[in-house]
Length: 162
Ligand code: FES
Ligand code: FES
Figure 1 (cartoon, rainbow, N blue to C red):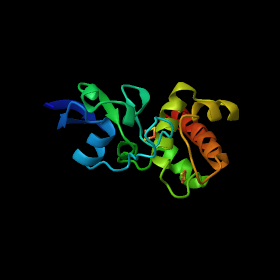
Figure 2 (cartoon, rainbow, N blue to C red):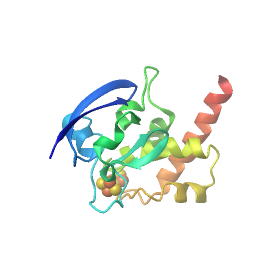
Figure 3 (cartoon, rainbow, N blue to C red):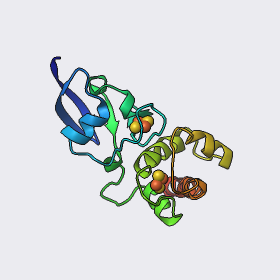
Figure 4 (cartoon, rainbow, N blue to C red):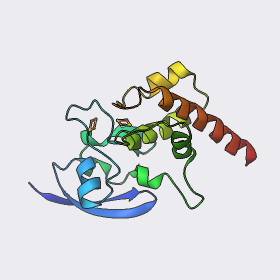
């Protein structure tokens, strides 16, 4: 088992981390880089609570080796807010009560963040399909759908104001 030093852009910062060949990205993020917002809810790639953004795609970080992130641009939930405050997706989840225990929320928001760039004006059905890789035990999904709808409107208003 060899160790590798990998460099990648993590939430806008050049980052170096030492990992084994077999280290999963989710473990590198949580255990080596202390970014514990990315969670683990299964071992079969279903739940999506580990979702992060890699080079513009939603990726389940439990199903990627850390070495595969070398040279890439990775965004985790800790990178969503900026100096201006919460990202529109985060604000909408709060406003619409799109979370309870919060365990799925980080992956759910990372998926919503990318989904709304793929489809800025989604229908309810498109949101349900678009977030179908993310499971939630608490909300029954209804308020998550509302949150994504609200985030979509807010993002469009922000874009129009620029
Ligand atoms: S931990 Fe369940 S899909 Fe990654
Ligand atoms: S808010 Fe608890 S699992 Fe989704």
